[in-house]
Length: 415
Ligand SMILES: Cc1cc2nc3c(=O)[nH]c(=O)nc-3n(C[C@H](O)[C@H](O)[C@H](O)COP(=O)(O)OP(=O)(O)OC[C@H]3O[C@@H](n4cnc5c(N)ncnc54)[C@H](O)[C@@H]3O)c2cc1C
View 1 (tube, rainbow, N blue to C red):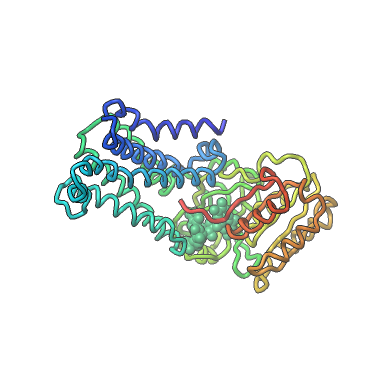
View 2: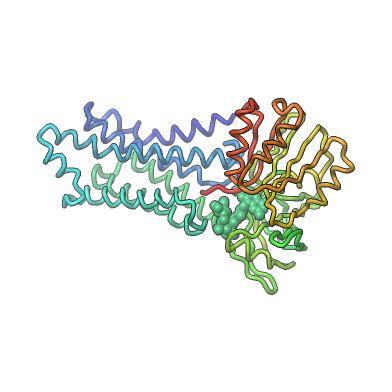
């Protein structure tokens, strides 16, 4: 089933190029035009992967997979766009090098050339921002939008070069659907589920647990899944109003759910001051991390606040199979939920909980994992910061744990 959305998006990406390919000259110049259309198609279709509709993300096997495709298609499109003027210049290269350079030069006064260069420079700025992980998320996201601006400039370039065409209409349609859906539905939260903060507690200094009560139809969510939540105003609180992803740490039958939110950047630091009565909007559910797990022995590895999906499971029902939970945290931190987890382990014979203090060196974690019996036969679930997940995944692979037994949820993705 997961192949269908991939085929659909690739077809959409190739469509603008397929519609014009028969009219192109069969030389390098013709290939230059084709590479321009292929690049444009790939980048436009990659925007469809910014749409965060739950049915669409499940179809893709999760947001993480969707975003990987979004980035790969965007990069492939960018390389093709870079190749586009070089192949076009081949026609002038037959005359001499100076004429070819004049054609390519950013100082060439031709309008088509100028717009092409402006589009490329804006695209490069957008890409530079994309790879700059030090930027705060909201700055990063605004700079990432430069890529959409670059696309629109690129469409202007195409319209000047070849006039209006069906390929251009298809491209415009894709960009229009993707950008308006993402902005209106996802970012401004039209159609998001209304909730209200019912209770607030602080399991540790930098973590706030908030119980959310539905004000209308509750969102149907399973343990281990996450929501995008935006906090608005309350009696004495004004939230940042942006949608951020949080995994539910408790799901209740009456439709209430809990989120455990760690203070990290501006928005989550302010959330620590949350109070009952604050209006909240939720989008989701998202995530397939702990859904449809095979009934076999498991190891859960949580880095810091990455404990939330496992907490949601343990708060719902006892584990049915042998489960070792390794909860990794930094020495200087107060350890939230440690007593609650140990209490579950005391009454559930299949559950073993290890609380492990660890800084940047992962050796203590590897030593502990190496002592867990039948490591290679276990299903292993990892949740937390990307660096921890990357280190543990490669160590597990070196130990011979098959890739399909390693499942992870990163608490950081950018899109
Ligand atoms: C699938 C998933 C589940 C998560 N579950 C939890 C949870 O249960 N509890 C918890 O405390 N934290 C969770 N997080 C992390 C949480 O989303 C960030 O800590 C929060 O968004 C930070 O926002 P900020 O404005 O305070 O900080 P910023 O300084 O803006 O961001 C800090 C970090 O969070 C990431 N981030 C910020 N906003 C978003 C966003 N809208 N989408 C994706 N990443 C973002 C940024 O890349 C950055 O690295 C989860 C993240 C993901 C991706």
